[in-house]
Image (cartoon, rainbow, N blue to C red; front, side, top):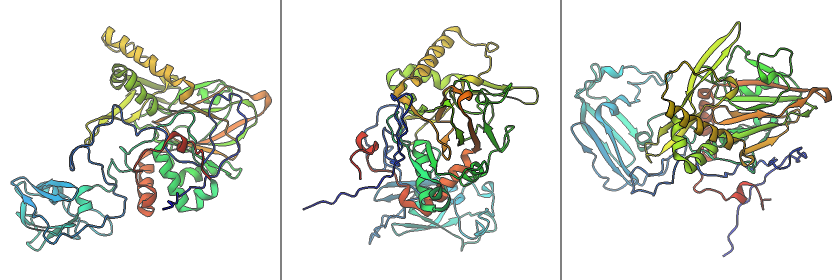
Length: 475
């Protein structure tokens, strides 16, 4: 039997010779993956069905056909909660919290989506009076319901709602704890055309999916206008306004208040670490770049952190605990904050420690000598920080290119580090227009895009090979 292999057409931007050929210059629209998801530690063995390691079904996937058993198992009702056996493991919920999750027209206004009750209104001794379960839908009538709800009130939950009660569950492909694809310098990052990004909703959703996975996206063929960066940004969400303005320019100015506004080399960093809520995503639209130098460099901090956790677990642990201070201290603006280098969480399904954010911006670090710190621990943390900094300088982690006029880079500010090589203004001009969009706004865009095009947001069943990720052998 001849098996037809589906191929994916990939367009590519012509490579421009780099002044430093040792760094990869991938311009293919390939959106395949290079590395594992951002798991910090060995992959756990698959547990039994319904256990901690059971794969999480994506909320945005179309509802799976539920085989209606002729005799579905009866829900088990305990003193505190209810348990339902399904073909993919048990689902359980506390009575109190299950009642709180009711979204019937009596409980939630169907237009505003706002609740008509307070959580604290629910009696603590509430429990089901009767239940109906047909294998895909649970109906519950309550004993000792909220005052004002009579015996006819019925709460209805689909299996999908029971498994994934949140509108944008954090472990979904659109959520804050989504799976990530880690990359090195050979990875071919996605270039999407301006027309597709702005005017083709399905292509835009595909681009957002790529951004959600890799944290880095490029837009090409942008009209030559300073106003375009705002249009590109607001396609994802409202602009984040700061003391730099709602949009801003990166070009050389005298007596600059930011090293970005000079022609000097700018090392790897993340923006606005001195704020309580650093921007989630940053855009840089190239308007001019005719001078010698000025190449842009990007590195996946999650990929570096994962390798550090394998090579030196104690150094990784030290950077999870080390909080660095940051400041912006000028005549009219003073900001200060501190962050751990690696912000992590414990995956409730695998019990692994995983990255939520990285926070690293050496140019804006604040003095820490006023802190009372143990000497030995501090020196150990500094050695770990030095190891992380040196790993970032390894060429295998650095993706480098020189942005051309009409191109814009979009990147996740608290994952993808960015830097810039020195440039010579005597040989030309360099001008980028920038903007920020908050993480919450972009996550919302991910979720609404996935709701419209669910097939683009399903997690891949397996990791592609390096050859596939590089786009080799594809038509």
